[in-house]
Image 1 (tube, rainbow, N blue to C red):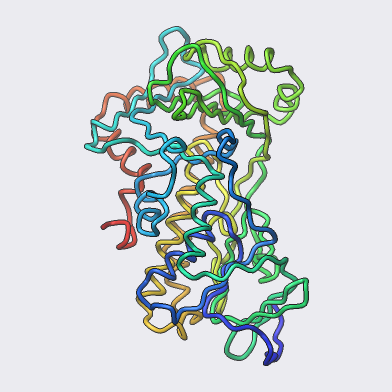
Image 2: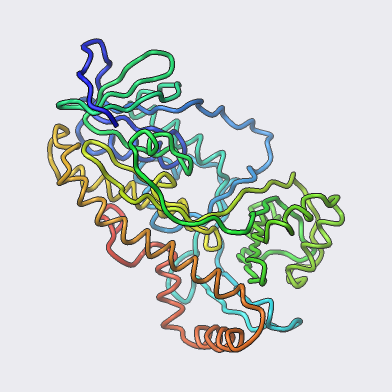
Length: 415
């Protein structure tokens, strides 16, 4: 990030949000709904803006398990109620079990929404539809969409300057980097990352199962990685199968029938025979976190700031908590002229960095714990899961935490 004098012909904004995924669009919505009226100028930059999903299209391969906290954020933005009911499926129960616990009657850890006084444990939402509705709402609230690639971010005396590859230049009091795992904004801001790459790929697709999913999320921990079945509204399941990379390559080479048979076996036949109904895709897994979330007049959130293992489906939920927290911090600071003040941004960084680090470390430890397939660790793991299943108080705390209803929450989530 270099110092450079401002050019008078640069287009000016209060906030430039880089990235038009769900997190970036929601951040723009939260900024524009804070009661500052049309005076707040927010730009939303992306290399390319997505197109509206065709009405006849299948569920996106990317689905999100949306927590109660995230649902509240989306409702506040006016996004949640715009989602078609056919692409939102509440799930009421969750069952987790260890592959080392022998079939046909393994010891499940079961969670039920009735036990915590909630209508559900979350909702499975179509990723493409959610992104589209978030983007449409941001536009409706007044965000200025700018389709272009970044070429530079430079610090000036009283603002940041963003250079675009088409030659345009923009100025803003605050830059928000929300452009994903390989964030160009983070790179241009010279913010380093730490973490490690897992020797795993996640395989995703949709399947029909011989037995009904019963609005239940199912997760089996295998020595090679966790396998999750997420219930869709049309009776199918979306699967996320995290497995060792060499095994993922082998599985991807199978025909549909053979893959279905392998999936059925890996699931312990909990839902009977599995039949593929969608293409199979894969993505590499890693734990990654930015060493800093903030610099003067610049801040990171979502996957640009942190990437966690998908075994608990918390990636988007952590990102939306980032949005809610940053929105509150900026609202509390008063004037948009103070948005880039490092004292203001440090408050957001302290609030969210520790929470996200603990979440990532906890999921990493859980993945490592279940990778052991023999010895005293397995016995201790079985004992621990049994203890959790027998304690309603522990299960209640875990469920409320997964729903985003515990911890140090922004006011807009507390209600």
